[in-house]
Structures are given as C-alpha cells and as structure tokens.
Amino acid sequence: MDIERRIELISRAPTDEVLTQQALKELLETESNPVAYNGFEPSGKVHLGTGVMCAYKMKDFIEAGIKFKVYLATWHAWMNDKLGGDRELIKKAALHFKHSWIALGVPEDKVEFIWPDKLYDDIEYWETVVKVAKEMTVSRGVRTLEIAGRKESEAMKISSLMYTPMQVADIFHFGVHIPQLGMDQRKANVVAMEIGEKIGFWKPVPVHHHLLQGLVKPDVWPLPTDPAAKKEALSAVKMSKSKPNTAIFIYDSPEEIKGKISKAFCPEKETENNPILDLAKHIIFREKSSLTIKRPDKFGGNLEMQSFEELKASFREGKLHPMDLKSAIGEELAEILEPVREYFSKNKEAAETKSAVENAKITR
Image (cartoon, rainbow, N blue to C red; front, side):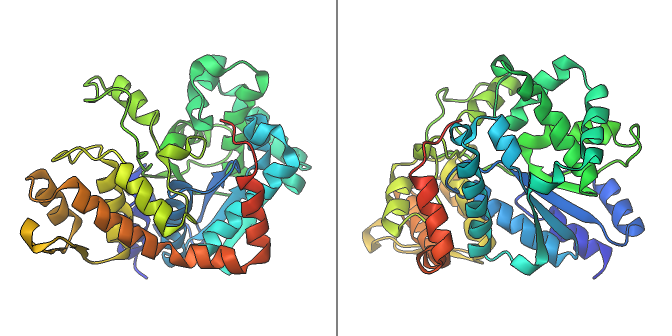
C-alpha cells in the first residue's frame, strides 16, 4: 500500500486533527513498523463515542498496516476515582471495553491489548514517568487535567498531578509513534511532542478523533462566541456515560435508540453543533453510501440523500424537518448496532461484564 493511501486511512473521519500531516508523511517514509495506540479509562458502559468512533479508527489503522495497541488503563481509572475506586470492578469494566470493540468488528488478533498489572512492575516505566514529571510544572499538570475529564479547580489530590506524566510515559514505554486519542486528550499528546526528544525518546505524531456531541441542549444556547466559553459549553454536553441522557450505548435496544433520538436536541435549520447531524456525519455516512428519509406523500414523500453534504444542505434550507431526520437516523443506528446486541446476547463473558457495569454506580 502506498503512503498516500495510508495517510488517507489515518486521516479519515472521524479524525479531526493530525499533528502534523508532514510529520506523519515523514514517519511513514522512515519507520518500517510504526506503532499507534489509544488508552482508555474503564469506567462503565460503552457509548457511541468510546465504542463506535474508537473502533473506526482502530480498523482504519489496521487497514493502513499500522500495529495498534489498546491500553486498558485500570490504574488511571482508579486514580481518577472511577467506579468508586473499586479496582476489581474497574478490571471487569476493562474487559467489557475489550468485548465492546470486538463486537463492533475490531479483529482481536490484529490488536494488542495491554493491561497495567505487569507493566507497572517495570522500574523503567516509573523512571520514564519521573523524567516526564521533571519537565512539567505543577501549573501545567493542573492545566492538563482535561485529559482526565476534570476542571483545573478539581485538582484536589496529588494523584491527579500524576495522571499526565503517567499517560505521557505510556506513549514512550509502549514504543508508540502515533498516539491516536480523542480531542480531549490533546494536551497530554502535546506534552509528549514537546519533551520526547529532550528526555531521550522521539517526537510522536498525534492523531486526534472527533468527540460526539451529547444529545441534550447545551446550558448556554446559542453558544457563546468566545472560543473558550464555547468549548466549555460543548464539553459539558459531550456524550458521556456518567450522564446517560446525553448518550446512546452500543447495545441499547432499537426502542431505546429511537426514543433517545426522538428527544434529542435538534434545532430546525441549525447545522452546526447539532448532535443528530453529528451522528449522521460520523456514523451513518461512514457505514452507508446513502440515507433514505421516509416521509408521507403529503409531506413531500421520501428523500434519498447521497452524501452528508446533501443532507446538511437540505436540513439547513428547511427542506427536511427535524423529526423526519431523527426518525431516519434512529432507524439506521438501530440497524447498524444489531451485531453488537447479538454479540452481547450470545457471548457469556461479555454479557457478564455488561451486567457488572450496568449494576455499578457510575462516577465522574
């Protein structure tokens, strides 16, 4: 496969950012066996963002011939007080995450799943953590708390300040050239870029994917024009397992999916920051080449959309009502997720992990 095609796959939506395209090209030209990774805090049920979006990128990288490692970061979840700090439950949640990606079509034999248990017995890992920490100020450690889903004002424990140095150390200890994480993890990856060569390693090439917007209306609407305020408003409503009303879970029933979609925020003619169009762009048109909007003849009859851009334009011009859009997206999403529901109904271990996280108290 030529480099252009590999770059196309790596940069394919839901990728939002590559730091940088030139650095990626140079990496693929010079590194014969590049490694990518994503790391996850196991913390409960799996929604479309953690499940579908991350599975897409894993499959893209595998197709591009990149070795992909998935870090099941149970210690990070424990440090961040997820699932009440119950380490056994966190391990169960990590196994649940693994089953979720397999259910979504990620080939298990093409991904290396890493657990921290033996890793953290390695003194070289902790040496790397200290090297990273020595290059960071306390204030920067606080500013990077976004990667743990925390505000700066929530840095109440010393363990919070260990989070970023450990995450950056993971990149180098796993031999990662491409940290492939969500946009909310950008600050940690930038630290890795800035200090990698300085502490004796390399400069990684981060690839960040899009974060799905939650289904609820932002507290501030219309959104503020100030970029920082806008980012905070959208961050507060990103799809989150700790806020079930914002999320669709990958094994929700067709009735649950359609019910959540029908109640979702979808302002008429508004094409920016619209969670239903977000789903259409990043999931429906990733899976399908067209979308049929079913409507009675008295409302204009069915519409056949051949691309997301066509759908977006039709909605913006008022030719497509929000309820008709919601109905179509709900139907398609329920169909796309049918194999996941089937997997969890037939795989005993997967079903047990699902039951464990469903019965757990989800904590931020």
